[in-house]
Length: 364
Image (tube, rainbow, N blue to C red; front, top):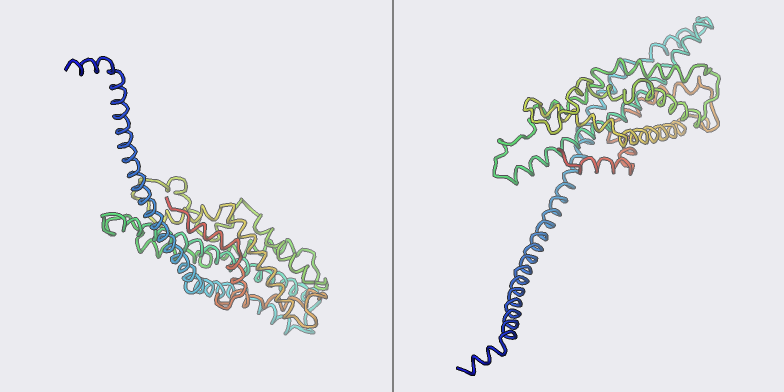
């Protein structure tokens, strides 16, 4: 016993230090073990999340592609057909051509020049207006369907991830959905008179001073069409052309709809406000400019191959080009499955990227 007491007095400090080290080591071991298990659990969770993310990405990609098919096979053909009928009714050049044909040898020089000038303005107005309308409708409807499809997908995904049944969640009402999609008819049913008037004003400004004997080449025609589009798009307030595509009053809720807790704000108005925000975005304006130029270039190239005696490459008097310009509307407004101009726009890398990013962006 005395030996133990002596040993303790002599080695107490060492014993305490050794015991402390052993205790600390055991504690560190336990902490490390717990941390390791937590890391393993976290890695499993991350792996599961990555797997879910891949599933979601695959589903979104499939849904996105199905939406593009809906645009091309259902929504757009209806809109283009309706547009073609309305333009033919509103801008009828057959009456002027009949008067010129029947008045041969009977019309005075001033009367004949007046009719030819009217034919010139109407033919260019119809061609450029058709080109602009088909391009803008195709882009606008694609914006609509992508926004709607994204909302429906995300709302459904959120619903499936909760304990609530779908009917209890704030999903898009079928009536709001139909109202939103049918708003694409606004250009044809409401905006057409003002659109024709403003487009004709741009045509008259650009063609002012152009004589029937003036030589028109492929390049001159392309530059003339682009100049008309430029004058039309730049006249008035910035983004004034958006009002040809959708009702101006749908902007009343702009700035208050997103994130609003006001239950009286309908999903339809939310969708319309979101659509307008996309249309006035710089990226969309760039897409519009690229699409209009590609459409114009392709149309002029096709006209060059269709005109007789070597086409427009060598140049033709404007009077001889007008009949070919007048016939372009049927080609421009052809149904989407046979419309190579729409296919060119749809396949543009910039257009594909824009709509991919639009669909992928999360609604608020």
